[in-house]
Image 1 (cartoon, one colour):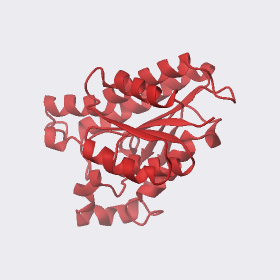
Image 2 (cartoon, helix red, strand yellow):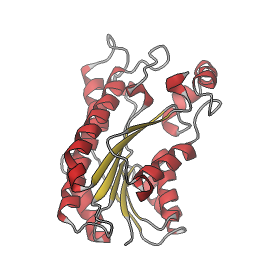
Image 3 (cartoon, rainbow, N blue to C red):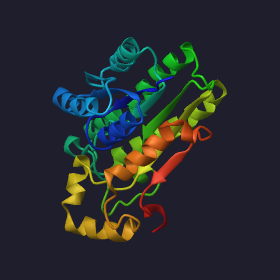
Length: 259
């Protein structure tokens, strides 16, 4: 049985993971706010595997998760995996240190990061429960995107109150859902990367002080972590290679948490 996966996000970690899964022969359904990014990624993926599609939509809209899951099932017949990658860094919306974080910053970041993943999990689980199990009896797997800042804060360089709170909420959501649906053979895990070399991390990666600090804080990477390293771990957690793993927040942090 071919595995079908929804990935929210069309650049960075989401795009690189999509390529890794397409190389395994998975059917991939991409979702992103920016249609141009979706088209560009899908064109690349179609060179690897023919069963690729996308839907451009705003995941913060209340009906988007339902629309996305329905579109994927209409295209590929089922949903076996969900990778919740899409999210934001909210400084331009007013996120920051507690005494500077605005209500707008808080609400915008929580809406884009935690609420979107809640809605996607809800619709994915609904679909997984009603479809026929896979040949091995499993019903599906969900991987949520958290951050090392949800486990190991570094306010001197990354003092973003709403962002940290949103990633902590995602971890708690992940554990709750894993406990709730293990009996149905649906696995739910989260991945918590350190500082990764993506477009989203440009503010940090362009800062010489932060880059120097990362050489010490992420010694396994010698600085920023490559997006390929996160994609490799993500593909493992989404695949049956990790079939006995659920309810875990997997730190892929280059040594951040122990340095």
